Length: 582
Ligand SMILES: Nc1ncnc2c1ncn2[C@@H]1O[C@H](COP(=O)(O)OP(=O)(O)OP(=O)(O)O)[C@@H](O)[C@H]1O
Image 1: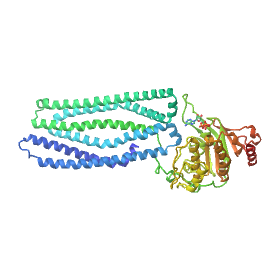
Image 2 (image 1 turned 90 degrees about the horizontal axis):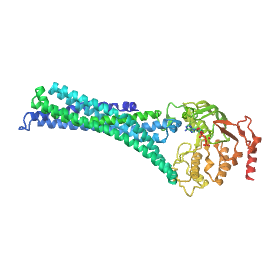
Image 3 (image 1 turned 45 degrees about the vertical axis):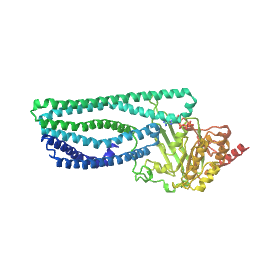
Image 4 (image 1 turned 180 degrees about the horizontal axis):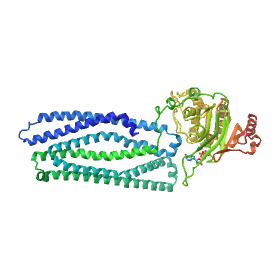
């Protein structure tokens, strides 16, 4: 990213180099004129006054131009870097984001970006002040090459000392940065775990201990870094005064210099004190920015696409799935086919083994078919639906839709065919239709009515819902409203009905799902509601990441021909429904 930003703004940075040299030279001219005027006697104060004020004016103009370039660069970079980072997070696969965790991503988006941007703010300042110091040294070389050589040695020693001290803080900064991630996790826990903590003082104490431990670690490292910086600043300052004292008290004895030359040396040295101090501070900020850039790199986010917020607009992404026409049903007879599909989480346990593997899975989902996926906790149901919908890229096998195989090039268009309500769904305020336009208000109101939410929630002219602070069951109804309005051909619901009351559960299984089925949707529903199993056309059971045969007394006579899934014919489904009603 640093390279990308550098290439984009290299002219801004490069122009500050000649500007810095000009500024440095002009500043030195001011010192030279003053020391010359003093050397020529203070009786005639008019000496060089014209020159002095002309040079000051040039200094003002140059300084202003440089500052304007610097602030303009900073204003551009600070927002560009955020755009790049948001684009990179958006381009990073879901599985990678999940394994990084929210706290790490948020810490990088807030903490690292701010520090990384400083690099571009500090770099021009560093150039300018290095230029001033170099011009000061050049002026010293002109005044007395011998004394200049000694001052140079002193400044090199100071420079090496500063560099070593500043670099010695890097490890502490890296550790501090890791603790910031932990602290972000603590903040997350503070808000999301507020209920549990309010009900348990033990939990609250344990949380407090963990926070205090993290803060103690942060405090210790911050103190160490600041101590080294204080040592560095003090040492540099004293070393500079030692050089200054050496010039004043010993130079005349060893170098046969006139008072004017010594005065000019001292003035130049005094003039260089502030730039040197700024260089020291910049070195500190550059190391901090380096740690931030390294942390950003460590997340290994994918490079942002050309159009980070519209993957389909990216020229590299083939559009074999005709996304424009997906609004209602899948074309042709072939549905969603999984052939020998497998997926393995990259996370490993303590003994170095993979935590969970799905597959191989062979199954087909057809338009107008209602499939239930059942299975115990941790059996792989949610993983399966993430793989079949393209959210996790299959590690092996082939997925095809309407006869077209899913590849890296067309996976974005493939995913557009799915509407999913997962266990940890995010509820958006605006309801949109198949084209991404605000949903039809009459449609939204009709469904709010049907979901029993009409009195509570209003819809504005842009189809925005007036409130989302609702019970979990009500929020899920709103999520379903989004899915219905989007009108995608494949609908995947992960234990949607688990939070619904018995009355609405019945509405869902006996009215809404059949309506969607009649519209020709591919319906994939994860459920544990065995009271409604007879409504399914087919039931797939997950066990340890595989689809296994499903046995149930109630429907033993309906075994699927492949022995894997049970296919319930419409007739048997109706019979089952009747039995449930009775
Ligand atoms: N983000 C993840 N990283 C690594 N492993 C994971 C991750 N999510 C799930 N797993 C592993 O995959 C297994 C299956 O999880 P999955 O969520 O698919 O189960 P499930 O059948 O949906 O369970 P439940 O009924 O409890 O929702 C888990 O036992 C876990 O070991």
